[in-house]
Length: 366
Image (tube, rainbow, N blue to C red):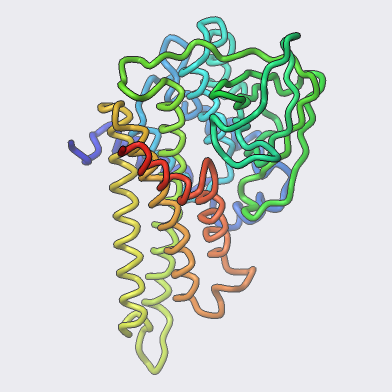
């Protein structure tokens, strides 16, 4: 197992860092956080021009046909820049379509998703139930329609296709502009990623029925798709934690008390060292999960839950600790650090919180 990035992966990382640092400066992120959808179509077009929406889409459907490691590389940089973009939501919908869609469904939707002409979103969380991709009670009616209420649907507005989780691990395709679809914004902790409530009232839907085990013992194609989604979220949390740590270290070098930088005092130095320990631990688990998805599918599901649980907790702890290093200024609205803390907190709960995934790791180890 080699965790060093290859030349092409290094190039992807450099391109992503340069592009995102130019397009999503802190003042731009702050401005977008106060807007309706949290991003502009012009920004999305630039992201699409890089080919990122089609990163994991097979070449025969217009994508780049790359693996989980390349996805993780880009997601880490997105977290580092705190980029408010619907890319993760659209990629998640594509991954589930690839895993469980029929040939006709893939042919219809994947080319548009890969090019960025269309966007997708995933609706998992039932209004009256906990998070679980197989824990919903939503079922397709005999007339082929779907009625449900889903909450915490990231980037639901403007999505051309919605992948809706149902009972027994079933997933359904719903067109975003179909009659009976109502999407409304909800208050969010993290203003850089908008969430929506999705209400379906007898909406025509298609079952995703093309998935199979794909030769991976103990893991279905859908489970492996969720493993990739979880690992992508974990990678974004790693990027958030890395940036928060760098902000804290820079401040500790610059801020002085009693004519000495505060980083010279053990209480601050030890706090920064602990941040580094947690960031590197989260990064190792995340890249390990990505490697497993690409090369050892049998262990991918468990590795993804491990990465999601640790990276989610680590990003929150590192961001909160960075805020403490900044002292009083870190608590102000004018400082940008609170955006990173909010994204870290939101990511820790997206697609299952750390407690849920730790319990899952234990269950999968039996």
